[in-house]
Every structure is written in C-alpha cells, then in structure tokens.
Image (cartoon, rainbow, N blue to C red; front, side):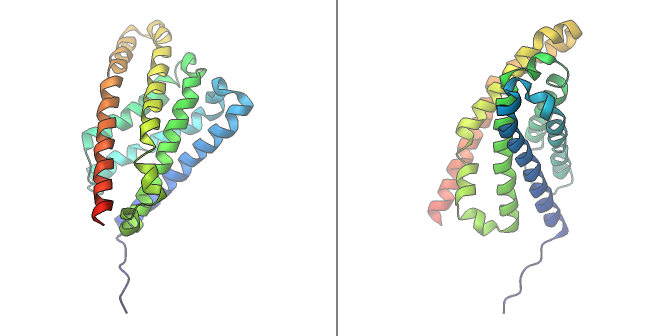
Length: 212
C-alpha cells in the first residue's frame, strides 16, 4: 500500500494562509454585492472601507513569504502590487472623501474581490493537490480567463479613485499631490505589463493541458 506523503509545515502554513485570505476576500465580495443595493455604490466605503483596508493589509505577508523563501516569484513585482493596493486603501480612499463616494470604489472592490477569491482558492488547490490544479477545471478557467475583464475594471477603477482624490490632495499637500500624479501616470503601462504577463501565463497553462 502506497504511503501518503506528509506535507511540510511551510506548505501547511501556506495552504492555511491562502484559505484564510480567500475567505476574507469572499467576505469583501459578499458584502459588496449585498450592500450596494442597500446603501448605494457611492456610500459603500462607510460600510466596508475599514474591513477591506485590513484584509488588503494582510497581503504584506506575501512579501515576507518571498523574503523567507517560502515562495518563488518576483519580489519587485510583488512589492509593487501590494504597495499600490495599500496606497489605494490607506493613502487615497481612507484620506479623501471624493474617492470614498465614487462608484469606482465599488467597482474596484468588485474586481479585487473576485480576482483574489479565484487566485487564493487556486493556490490552495495547487498546494494541496498539484495534479488536480494541473488538470484544469473551473478554478483553472477562472484563474486564466476572468482577468480579461477584471484587470481593466480594477485598474480603471483604481486610477479613477486616484484622479478623484487629486483636488483634495492638492489642498492637503502639494508634494503628495504630485506623488499621486506620478502614480496615476504609471497605471496604463502597469496594466499593460500585468495584462500581457497573464496572457503569457494563460498560454503556458493551455500548453500544459494539451500536453497532458
């Protein structure tokens, strides 16, 4: 009888982390869908802003995972992705009222939460059973197809929130205003880079399925 391989403590931790993160983002998604019809998209921040802020802040651990060698990925890319999200929740939407009351805040949360639920759930399955993840299925399809819509929606919503914050930022600090202007200018090339990266990953995944 073949013995079942035991998982290392680091793998068990990563499975737990990704499962917990998927559950937290599922909470963001569910509350966004349920609250928008009740309070309106322009009033979502007052009901969900604090929760989302701390859920997103948990992603700092992903940088630590790379530094500790628990994961193999681009450290620079991860730092950019995590810090840009933290800027949105702490340095834009938490500071200024205009993005808080923008519909773009709701569409941003919708894009983020769907993306993260798919991503973290995929990681859980991939860590727990790589064979199951490699065989495709619904999770694999969601992972490598939803970005076609969700990436432009998320990046466009983020950029609009930053843009809406500019007048208040200028009154608060001219230096910070120019920081946001520079960041706003990076959204188009940043989206292109992420979009083409995911297209390459999708092609790689499709080639893997054909070989199987």
